[in-house]
Length: 151
Image (cartoon, rainbow, N blue to C red; front, side, top):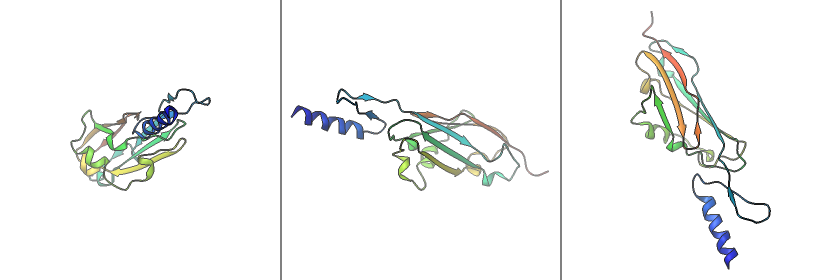
């Protein structure tokens, strides 16, 4: 009876979001595995001419470098533009088509997606530094520039 209760508890714990459990080889106590996600963001070019931001697309990517399937929790991620998170980011990041990898990213697999954000966040002339992170990942920031209208 005790063994079945332990197996049941381990099963429930392994299904919780963001919790990764690795089975021991000798049926000993289970140990939590470190979640190892790599993330990156990019834009297609470093400089955008005025009026050309309508097609400004930011690509997002996450790779599972661990040994267990994990929930990357993309919908709970954060985006900052020049140090400020847009008020509608939660709506944007939770919108669009979703593959199973958005909630269960197997080891060695990646998730890649893009959003057209030019008119929404980058309509003004200036230099933009964009950061993206989640509970278990952090992408390196990117910087690009939007120039005034055509000369």
